[in-house]
Image (cartoon, rainbow, N blue to C red; front, side, top):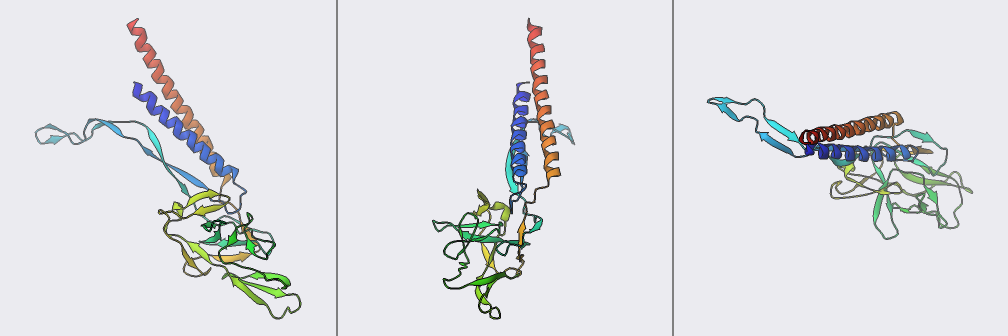
Length: 265
């Protein structure tokens, strides 16, 4: 009887974690390039009272066994990297990835991070940076003394500018590359729309956008989150009901213990 109390408690803890995960997905419904997380569960160990296939008579075995589980445990969170909706901004520094791939950025300490957020900006040194001020690995820079009337970013990541005094002679400023991973779900979420490579994700593979399975660059667009509000609300309701059912199982176990105690009195 005591076992049911602890088993139901694991179920309640699991549903609490599921609600926390769902709440984070909903909170980031308008976050650029955000990818929803999916929580996976696994059942715990079983107490085997009778092993399946036990011989019950000569030449006869039991078709089933008698096993009682001990509850559930969270197994892991899985990032779902399906594409979000492309939203047109008409800002020349906004770019979206249509397909697979990540932009590679550099932290001040020299470490590499990866992002799907293409809301880039130009800093005071003419360098193309993220909204947090991190430099792009491509090192796109507009030199002093160059005046551009327009900045163009092609589908293949080629960055060029149209000179104010010579519109017929565009200048090439650099080349954006995209990174891909064998297992993107193994990337570590670092906050700030950034991911870090891990042993689970594998090493980065850099390439030109639009080639070798990498997505294409869309200038003037931003990728929205891939959170489906209706799906998350259904998950929220399901988790709430499962939490209530587990609490009822605890109440039922408590009432049975109370009945047993009354018999002794």
